[in-house]
Image (cartoon, rainbow, N blue to C red; front, side, top):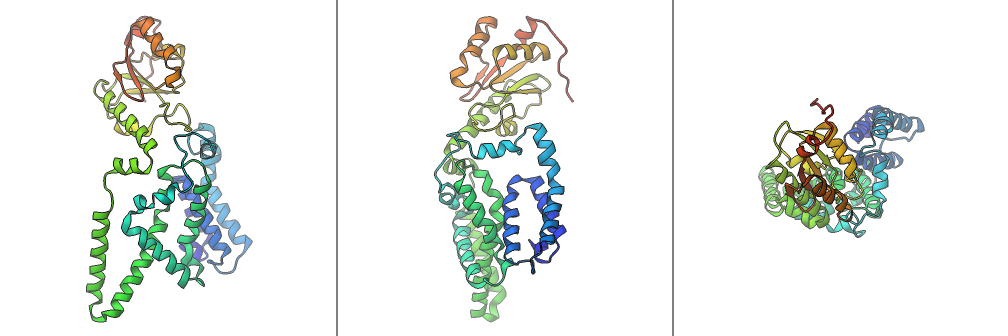
Length: 350
């Protein structure tokens, strides 16, 4: 934003490109920058200038989105846009989903300060387009995520700097008003305001992440709890260096199949050699993988309505029952499968 204001379009485009490499939701800031340019925040508008900004940003991050992700078929490619418009029930919610959860996202101290700051900016900075940057980012972003049917808690994280800037405007105005009232005690007034706001933020904001996530989106909290419980169960029996098949988890609807669950990955502290497969893996494919790679464990998460062929087949053919079972997954000890069939070259640790 500062680079745009000082007419450094190459630097502004570079910063936007780097932001997009870090997080795709930085696109909200791209739209904000474009609106500020239209409003004259960078002075006289020129197509050449905006072409430099867009071109630099595209060169900086375009290779990642167009080449790497499109070939890897990983989250961040076109699948993200399909997911945003999908109709999976676990992610859908009311249009006011994000507005109703602003107190959880910002806290009861920052939320009113941000609202006051937005009012002050719109009232006092009408002729200063650059000062409107938080509004230019938040307004179209909130409109977009309100219209999109799927709602996820983490997408609004990228908007926190804009909310914080608006809250800062309100705090600055408050401090200036108090200092004008007590001119000789300006330092003490500033320190008192900082201490008061800090205390209100600390004691008024929720610090229990899981409880907050449950209030924010209970269905997604339930999925995260399932993944955590599965990881904790696997930690008790899987040993470092063993070979393990892990499927994607069926309850994370709308996400690409065959990718590891990040919540499970976070809580799973053991260091086995892992082979990742789709949760739609068939019994024949499972047996082939276990025998080919000499897998000691298989963590499966089939769709409940389609689980009978796998669970029944493992029990009937090999006498296997889950060593651990959670609400979201089944963990099998599979050494008997490769010991009873053809043995091929195992996978090796990188």
